[in-house]
Length: 463
Ligand code: SF4
Image: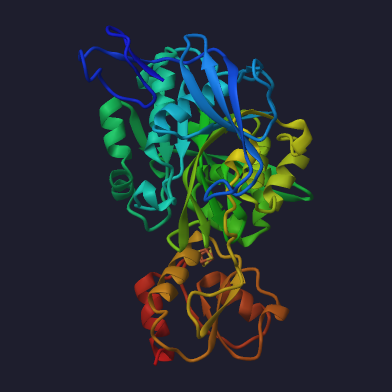
């Protein structure tokens, strides 16, 4: 609720100045409510499929009235309160009404705020993998990061100590990505620095994973930060099921480490990588998420309208999976097993919105399908280099008929994945994997081969 400082007029949506006296408008946060009226809804409607539910008429301490949907039963005269949480395993759910920025700040308040010293080096890590507009659901909405910046500055952070750190996919022009996504403008407006993660130094960490060694090069900025705020966008991912907070932190390693990871047990390695990182807070952008064939341009934007925050990375990801109706993937269960957080729904406290109210089923990514009707994919778990280029190319060529071939990509290819038809291996990983199986395949070298090279190579099978 917004109130004019001067004439005390009230609005239920944000505005910059009072439209009557042009004075400053302040955001009033009611401390508590009394239930003044209740209506029980027994007929479902679009967006309100689950019944019965209740619409409460609430009165705040200043006599202002508010309407709130709930599945819980209340009586007139009951108190309706939303307290901030002090418990580490709580997850804050903040619906986006009129403003992503305000919803983000509310999510932070729900989890008890963020503790830091004015001179702490703070890193904000969004997801800006591609040069896309936030309406695509592929990248983190800069308004979420703006809400975080406003919170940090208001709480006394020095803007010179705040850094937005991110590296786009290999072959993606980072400068273009930052401009197109709105981060360049955001940094200009607030005087905040942006750093391309790949322009910085990396430190080597050796992580013991079962009986193997996982060697990764991690951003030095991340390892030296006093506070890390991880800001993923809620997405499906056809290799890891979902791409949320724990997965977003894979973005802080360099390209060779990313490629190595995709050659191994990707999901387990993501979990183990998180054990080597400093602790972080997750503020997940669910303003517009991505469903279907995420995490890139083949996914479909999904209006979700929610900010999800928490200090326990496993609890946040677990709750998001529950909200979007998708199976909890291995990298999240493994992270819990490694002691990174709480997986048990009964032990995670939810603050803010009721889960049932904000649930929104996401379509899962199907890793068995191919974007081209005549070309099958043999998914050897490629890294994003081959993955994105092969998928984008086949999607572009989908209306041109082709001979029936199977494209193998990635290194994890076994005998049972290969049929008897024509196999075409794209990228060094697939080429070696197919060769090790003693199978014949026409191959295109490269790590990854460029889209132009791939298109030229595939031409002979196009009709
Ligand atoms: S060949 Fe392809 S899948 Fe293998 S590491 Fe290179 S880009 Fe990744």
